[in-house]
Length: 277
Image (cartoon, rainbow, N blue to C red; front, side, top):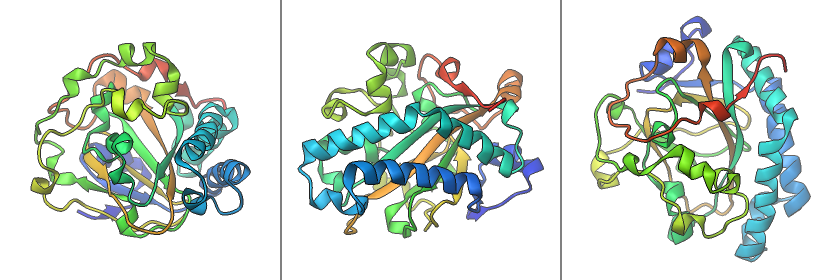
């Protein structure tokens, strides 16, 4: 399977059936990228991707935490997400979203035990998300395939060994939104219980990967099994992602296959409406 651009009228059905979707950069995605880059440059200087070589880990984490928090809580970023959907022919009033998160993948980051969860093979639905979840990902720079992620499309409707039963959304957020957004606790990666695939990643074979252009959008069903690729490049990879749910499909029980999700609770009541922005 390769990345495609289906007609917007068929987009949701295509995603639920497993399509991997690429959408070109548009003004709203460019605005989101500029917003995130502006926050990064204010904290890290004019070359944020190089800061990993210039700042000690605790200071770098603190500064990136401030960026994560500012972006996640920024109402203007939500307005830009609504505009992004509209510019691609979707009606924002039909959707709700989990606000945008900044993702940070440092060179050789997989060697840091605190970052283990970042590279875990997982389905987003194992975190209390519904079967019709759509994950929307935007890179802040042009990146090669070695610095993005891979999707095992052949596992969409095939159960895999996992420990999603350990995840209770309501219990998770009861410990504070800092853990949900990831801006303050540098030890969360060691203490928090994140669900993941229990098998050998190599046994899954090669997933579908991709190179990406700054500001483009990559969409896929949150039920897809996927994982970030470790990379040995010289610079940090920054990206944005948010998760959207179509309210009509949620009410109708439409979505991608849900074959092995045992997580509890629902994050949908905490999603933000996009209509009227």
